[in-house]
Length: 173
Image (cartoon, rainbow, N blue to C red):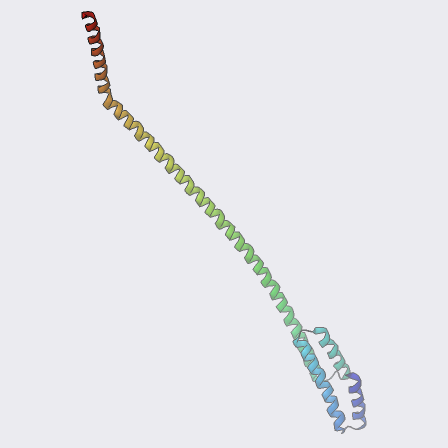
């Protein structure tokens, strides 16, 4: 890079019209520019900086050196912004995942609470229905007793009459 360019510059200094020296020195610079651009495109900052420093030593006044310095600086800034955005995105995704987990847990707990409340309501309804059945059974038993009470008295009267009859018959015999 720099050695060949310096050699062509010496030839050019001796013979400013030497087209081969002019062409070859421009070819060297052009290939170095391409190398720098490729390094920038591939985010290879150190390689781009090293090659740019080499070209700047050849001729720091070259306008293309300033352009490439600016392009390198902008590419590094853009890469830094991208990295920051990626970190921010990753953090946001982690926060979103935590929120999702929290919401899912809240939903699960709410469902459990709702199921528990529904079980409680069903248990109360069951207890009420059982109490109502028990009350109905007691009422039915009371009604049956009420209906059987006169029969019971009649049976007692019949038993007493039979006992009296048996007693009276024994005394006659």
